[in-house]
Amino acid sequence: MLLTPSAGDPEHKRSKSRTAQPVIVWFRRDLRLADHPALTAATAAGAPVIPVFVLDPETEALGAASKWRLGRSLADLAARLKRRGLTLTLRRGPALDVLRSLVAETGAAAVHWSRLYAPDWVARDKAVKARLTADGIAVESHPGHLIHEPWAVATRSGGPFKVFGAFWRAMRMLEVPSPLRTPQRLVAPGEWPVSDRLEEWRLDAAVDRGGSVLARFADASGEDAARHRLGAFIEQDLAGYPAGRDRPGLSATSRLSAHLTWGEISPNTVWRAASRAREAGVVGAEVFLQELAWREFAWHLLWHTPEIATANWNKSWNGFPWRADSDDAERWRRGETGEPMVDAGMREMFVTGTMHNRARMLVASYLTKHLMTDWKIGLNWFANCLTDWDPAANALNWQWVAGSGPDAAPYFRIFNPTIQAQRFDPDGRYRRRFVAGFDGAGGAEAQAYFEAIPRSWRMSATGAYPKPMVNLHEARARALVEYQAHRAAPDFRLAGIPD
Ligand code: FAD
Image (cartoon, rainbow, N blue to C red; front, side):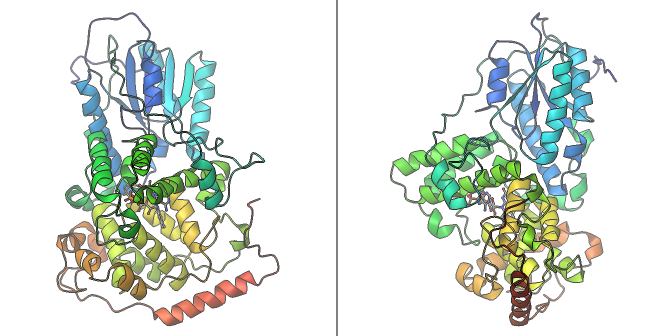
C-alpha cells in the first residue's frame, strides 16, 4: 500500500524542495549518529536522508523488556535526528514491503543499513537486498554492530575459532579503526513520508505492570547516556574492574551492554577508549577488552553456526535428560527458589531489566544443574526479561554454563549458591537490595519487585521468604551422576564439532 503524506500529521514536515534523490537509512540495532558507517556513507554525496525504523515481524517477536528498551532508544534517536532537522520515519509491516513502499513514495535511489548476523535477520536482509536490487535500487550494507566482521577473524586454515583463548589472541592483534564522527551535514528531503507515532506502537505494552518499575530502576538509554556511561566507567571503575567485576553488590562493571545491544554506542568507540587506557598503563583495561572480545566471539560463532541460537552446539548433548518446563522452573523464573543469591539475580532482572554477570552464571548453573532443566527454558526467559538481550551472547553463555557450548565450562563445575554468596556478596548487599525477607524488608528494588510482577503470581512483600526448594548437596550429586553417565556414552565427544 502506498501512503501519501497528510498535511495535518505533526510528523509530516515540508522543507524547501530539493532535487537530489533521497537515500534511505534503515536503522535497526544501530540507534546512534556517531561512528555509524551506514549513515556516513548515505550522507557522503550530500543527498537528502530519510532515516527509517521498521516495526517488522522480527522486531515484534522480541521479548517484553527488549521492546520496552527499544521504545526508549527510538525516542532518543528521533529527538536527536529532529535536532539535526531530520524526521525518523516509523512504519509497521514486513521490512521488504515497507521499504519498497517508501522507495516508491519518496523516489529514494538507495537504501543503507548496518549488518546484523543472527540467522532470522540475515535471511530477512538477504531477501530485502535481492528484491530491492532487482527493483534497481542501490543497496549497501555496512559494518557497525561488531568491531570485526565474523569472516575477518579466522584460523590459519581460514575457518572460525571455536576456542575463546585462540580467538582473543588473534583478535587483539587486529587494527580497530578510529570511530567516525557524526556527519556534519544532514540534508532533509523536500517532503517527509508519513510516519507512525512511536506511542501508537505501545512497545511497553508487554512488560505490563513492570514498565513503571523499569522506568525507575533501569539505566538511562540513548546515545548521550551511553557516552557518559563509558566516560564514567573508564575514569572511575576501569582500574578496579578485574577485582570488582565479580561483586554484584558493587557497581564495578561498565553497564554498557544494553547500549551496545541497541547500538547507542559503537563497539569500536568502547574498544578504542579502553585501548587508550591500556596504553596509558591502566591494568584493568586488558580484562575489560577481553569481555568485549567475548561479545565478538559470541556473534562470530552465531554467524558461522547459526544453530547455536536454539540447539546444542555440541551434538553429543542431544540425548541429555534435561527436564522440560516444570513447577521448579517456574519458581526459578519467579525468584522463589529460596536461595537468596539466585533469587536476587532473578529479581534484579525483573526490576532493572538486567542482571549482573556473576548472578547470570549462577542462576543458569542452578537451573541447568541443580534443577536439571533444559538451558533453552532459561534462554527464553532471559530473552523475555533482559533489556540487553542479544541472541549471540545469550545463546553462547547459556550453552557455556550448561556444558553443551564451545569452550564450555567443565560439567562438574556446579556453582554452589551459598559459597558464591560468601565469596562474591560477603556483606549481603546484593541480596538485601533485591530480596525482601532475606535480611529485613530489603531495598527499594526488593519492594518494587512486587509491583512489577504479574498479579497472578500471588507474591507479596509481606509474605514469608521461601525455604530452599532443593537440597543443594543432593541436587548436585544427582546432576553429577547424570552428567557422568552421559559422558560415558560411547558416542560422546567432549569438544564436539557441530555437523
Ligand atoms: P562488562 O563486564 O562491563 O563488560 C563489557 C561488555 O562486554 C558488556 O557490555 C558486553 O557487551 C560484553 N560482555 C561481557 N561479558 C560477556 C559475556 N560473557 N559474553 C558476551 N559478551 C560479554 N550479555 C548481553 O549483552 N546480552 C545477553 O543476552 C546476555 N545473556 C547472558 C546470559 C547468560 C546465561 C550469561 C552468563 C551471560 C550473558 N550475557 C549477556 C553476558 C554478560 O552477563 C553481560 O554482557 C554483562 O553482564 C553486561 O554487563 P556490563 O555491560 O556491565 O558488562
